[in-house]
Image 1 (spheres, one colour):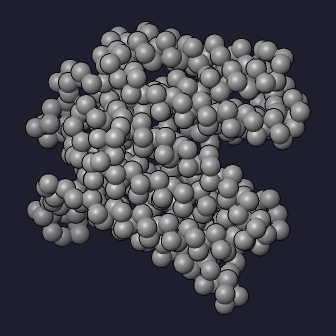
Image 2 (tube, rainbow, N blue to C red):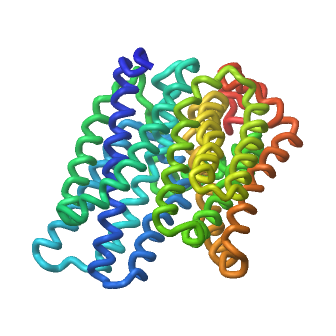
Length: 421
C-alpha cells in the first residue's frame, strides 16, 4: 500500500476523490435540511432526495465524453462547475431570494456533474497503474468513498445543527475547489487527444451517439451483460430492503436499531472492500459463488435470530462479500475492456444498476404495507442465494480466473478492434 500511496498520480486521484466525496456528503445533508426548513414539509425533502439520486440513472450519457476527452481536465472542470453552482445558494440566501425551487434546479445539475467521477476515475486507473496494483488501488478508492460517506453523513447532521446549512454549503464549495486542485496535479505520460475528424456539430453529434451505441453493445454482447444481471438484482433488492428497513427496525426497538443496522451495512461493505487485496489471487468466479452464498446465509440467520446484537453483527457480516465483489468487479472490467471503451462501458453498467434501486424501493414500500417487515427482510436475503446459483449455472461466469490473470482475449475483447469486442 505504501508504494501505491507514493505514486503521485494515484495519490492525487485518491485524495481528490476523498475530499470531493466529503463535499458530496455535506452537500446532500445540507440540501435535504435546507429544503425541509424552507418548504416546511417532508414532502419537499422527498423530492430533493429524488432529484439528487435520479441523475445516477443517466450516467451512461457521460461515458462517450470521458472516452473522447482528457480525463484529468474533465475531473477538474466538473469540480469547478459544481463549486460555481453551489456558490449561488449562499449568495441567494444573503440577498434574500433563496427558494425551494432554486434548490430543486441546482441539485440535479450538481448531481449530474458528479456522474462523471466514477467512470472517469475507473478509466484513469489503468492509465496510471500496472495490472498488479489495480486491486489495491480500487480497494483504497472504495474504502475512501464508503468510509467518508459513513463518517460525514453522520458528521454533517451535527454540523447542520451547530453551524447551519448555509455554512455547510460554503465549506462544501471549498472541498470542490481543493479536489479540483488535486486533480489538476495529475500528470499523464500521454494525453488522451480528442478526435479532430468531426468538426461540425452534426458530425460531433453523430459520433457521440455512435460511441454511446458502442458502449451498450460492448456490455450486452459480452460477459459484462451477464455480470450486469447480478449487479442489477443486488441494487433492486437493496432498494426494496432499504424501503422496509425503518418499519423492520421499529419492530425491534425503534430508530436506534435502524441506525445500528445502517452502520452495520457500512462497516461490512468497508471490510469487504478493504480486504479485496487478500483475494486477488483467487478465481473470481468461484469466489463470487461462495461469497454470495455466505452472504445469504448470514443475512437469513440475522433475520431469524432473536438476539438483537447478534442480528446486527450477522447482517454486517453478510455485507462483506458484496463490498469485496464490487471492488474485484471494477478490476475485472479495467483488465478486460479496451481503454477507449472503458468509461462508456462502466457508465452503462452503473446507469442500469442504479435504475433498479428506486424501482426496488417502490416495490419494497408497497410489499411492506401488505406483509410484515420481518418477512420482507428475510425474503430479500434470498436474492444473494439467487445470484450465487445464477453464477454457478453460467459457465462463463463460473470459470472466471483471478482478476490478475485475466486476459482480454479470453472474453472476446481486442484493443485494436473498432468496437472493442
